[in-house]
Amino acid sequence: MTVFYLGSHMPHWLATVEVPLFVSHRRLAKRRTLPRARTDWALDSGGFTELSMYGGWSTEPADYAKAIRRYRDEIGRLAWAAPMDWMCEPFMLGKTGLTVDEHQRRTVDNYLLLRDMAPDLPIVPVLQGWSLDDYRRCADRYAARGVDLVAEPTVGIGSVCRRQATTEIGAVVQALAADGLRLHGFGVKTSGLRAYSEHLASADSMAWSYSGRHKPGCGPSHKSESNCRRYALAWREKALC
Image (cartoon, rainbow, N blue to C red):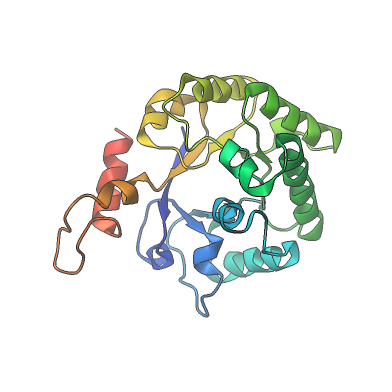
């Protein structure tokens, strides 16, 4: 793994933290002023929350593209942005009432729409699926639309964060990496890092915050470590050892 993005739900960290960060559009969208980044960072589209809450996307692609451009210009140092993809966990399919195939179609369609709408923005393709065959069918969809995933600097692999204790997702990541894809793992926890990080070009995680919920705060300003920058950075260092 070449780059590890520390997930943060506090956008002001962009101005104070010097390790790569992963920040959600949902956390940035309503801010009148934006921090100026002192680190490279990547943008999460917030799709997991959108689909969980609404069973679909409430954000319009044009509005999302406009927001990405604002972040690139005002925050700076934006490495890449995720598209408005559709996760394929079974419970997410239950939320939307759609199939894996339809989620894949919508994921690919949105990537192409955003790319055509804003070719100057670093929006990356994302593979969605559940089984290895699913992910490869999604890759075939991109190829049929003229997208050479092997030539892309980053290809996201979605729907992995809730099943990292299984050997199945490790085998999926290994196989796709062997196909020549430079993969980014979304929401990779420490078990996933140990199991298959060698097959990833990059990954992100906010597992530190979930872990910190159960630890008393290190100072009077917070009751737990779930929002603590010092705890997050220490977690990151330990996770990468």
